[in-house]
Length: 79
Image (cartoon, rainbow, N blue to C red):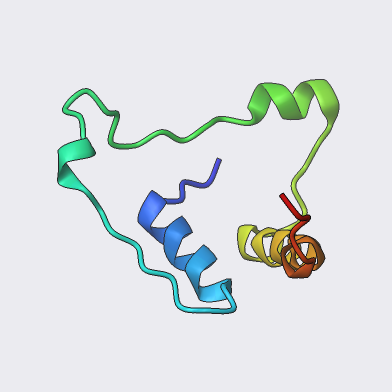
């Protein structure tokens, strides 16, 4: 697979947001046992399903934003 760092994903998502987004990293939540890099290998999935991704990550994020926009704009139901 193609690795994407969490900070790159956060930057891509916040760039698509309709309003400024404040992102804070809390070092107190970092754990020494966290694996610094995880990248999946799609070889077995591809062999079993013949699936090949055709949509780049940035486009997938745009599509997800656009699909969620109507729900986000809908008024909240009364409590």
